Length: 346
View 1 (cartoon, rainbow, N blue to C red):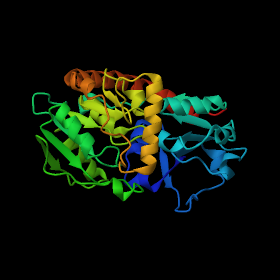
View 2 (tube, rainbow, N blue to C red; view 1 turned 30 degrees about the vertical axis):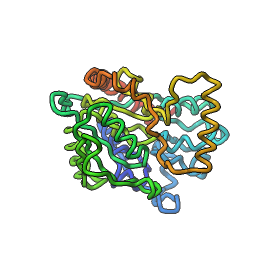
View 3 (cartoon, rainbow, N blue to C red; view 1 turned 180 degrees about the vertical axis):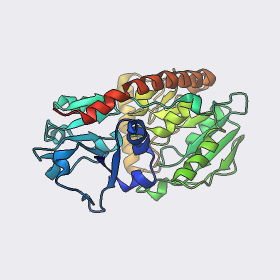
View 4 (tube, rainbow, N blue to C red; view 1 turned 120 degrees about the vertical axis):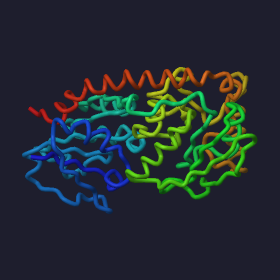
């Protein structure tokens, strides 16, 4: 019998996460019946007999309580950190101890294990040989898709100037539910940097191929979100050997070691002050933000540009690609255990 796997409609028509993290790697071990949630959070199709006959998988969204508490349920939940981070420990404690968790984030593993859930740690990697390698012999080219309004024009101007970027590949199409004030266009030039605006469609297989075509032109990449479920976009950039800049939060900081295989950005950087002075400045900034809320971008232009200027970008990219090669070998080795975790119930 095919194993029912529930995902959001988003995962079947727009995001590749469900396919990359579950369907494709597990296809040699099992067959799936892919099912989606209704608009009101109900299961569009569910048969009571499944609870006795087969394991059931829920991807990203946790199972409904009616199924969680069924005595015959053999449930595996595959949460994504960008959504699961919203649940506090009290919520996690209410989950039945019979449920299993497949974790692609250290933060998810920490919470699941702290409440006694059987947890499998996984780390996804892309095979770099299947990806076009970054060309550091061509002009420095930076790729940024403004999906969430993470950085603004001032940040982009500063990073392009600091890294001597000749071409900025810029896509401004924000994700659903992101405030429209975070969307913005750019002039044709930022200082000496030529801005090339990208117009590919945001979702679907054809759109992803178009996206990769532009990514292959870049050698510097800014991960576009403050939090990721896994982060396929920045992992694709790491596998190609791009110098990746990402916000210092899961899951980016679980794949990127600061100044080794990438660079982790802060929301803001305070230059050369002691701890007491930093606290005063932080308080003053909060006060200023309360009265003058004129910067909607969480990662500001206040970064350690002197440190960024000294980075050996080629070395960052080469290290990133090598680590993805090593990580892919480990990912392939763990797949049989991944399958057993889902299938084998005593």
